[in-house]
Amino acid sequence: MAAEEVCRYLEANGSMREDADKGKMFGVLVVKRGKELGFVAAYSGLLGGRNDWEWFVPPVFDAQQPDGHFKRTEAEISALNHAIEAIEQGEERRKAGEERERGRMAAERMVEEYRRKMQAAKVVRDMRRLQRNIPPEEHAALTKESQFMKAELRRIKKRCEELEHVASSCYDDLERQVDGMKARRKRMSDELQQWLFSQYSMLNAKGERRDLPHIFNALPPAGSGDCCAPKLLQYAYRQGWKPVCMAEFWWGASPKGEIRHHRHYYPACRGKCLPILTWMLQGLDVEPNPQEQNVGESVEVVYEDEWLAVVNKPAGMLSVPGKINRPSVYSLMRKHYPDAEGPLVVHRLDMATSGLMLIAKDKRTHEQLQKAFLKRGVKKMYVALLDARSSHTMKTVQKEGTICLPLRPDPLNRPRQVVDETHGKEAITRYEMLERREETVRMALYPQTGRTHQLRMHCAHPHGLGMPIVGDELYGRQAGRLYLHAQSIAFVHPMTKERMRFDRQADF
Image (cartoon, rainbow, N blue to C red):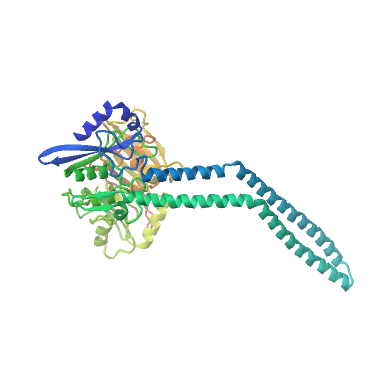
């Protein structure tokens, strides 16, 4: 209800909506004041260059005051930037660079001309030495001439170095000046960042305070403390209100490369917000983390022989042990096959994904299966239920095709991935539409590469299928589970060389 109220407010206020429509995260916090229930709202960072819009909570620390320390120092750093740019792009540096280049080329010509002279003289000496019965004194003169010319080359090189130094002295002076200014700029920037983050004194429900450098035990990422959740909690604590529940949602266009859907809810970012919220939520009665709830301690074995096994992982189970203290396919298989050697798990599925996985009982089988994966000799088919409720691409999606969108991790918001044409790794998925309904599409997905969240990103991204998988809380909408299942796996048995295929239908 609070989030819908914020949406209505944004729709009615064109002055702020213009910038919000470009893409912005908003948040609401429901609070108790005595017996009354109400809410406060926030936006992440700045909105239209401002952090003081009415109806939204103020920042934890206002660095935008024009006469404040941050803005004054920022202006000094900006002046340094202009001064550096003026030198680097100035006429004096250009002329000095040309003079340095002329000196270098002149020195190279001088050395090269003398080398050619030496080579011609050597040819004459070699021909003379081939003649019989040359006098000893002439032989000594030839040797002396060779030694003299080598020494003369060293003297010419030294003179050329001196000439180059004179020619480049003006340019080098300018470079040293710029290097000094850049060092000063970096020192000022680092000190300003340290000072700024020390002004963010974050409260928790116990009334305790801790600034950001101490929360992160290091210099925090840029923008830390300015996201919705920390701003909302800080304001509530300052007013003495009790937080009840909180949510963040995206408004407007999706950022390039990322996946954000208009008015969809998203968890707080991990890189900037997780450490802060871990501190700020202390003293509150917080609901259990759904990722830490037990999903059972058994996994179905679909096939096994003396070398390998195929298992059916349930949704919500880890493939290998992680930070969350709960059973994983690895830990269960280690108990099931106590005499097995090596890493056991050949490949992984996301915790939220269900389906077939390969288990190797010895190191040699593990190595052979991994080589088969690298050579794309293992064929997998996933089935997914896609959310077409808010899709603009459902009508244009072909019944089958291939998606090629390179991916890389978002370093401040792991495990989220982003599309990056420059730095991303190749990611290819073939798809086939199985069934189309009014609000959902059932899709077969055939990954040709194995990037993290490849299928989830390729389904949700507007340049892919433009329809997130149902239950994908990172790239779509939350539901009871992620409706993605590894239904089929086919490979050549590394020992028997038999071609094998296994299927387990999805339970959705």
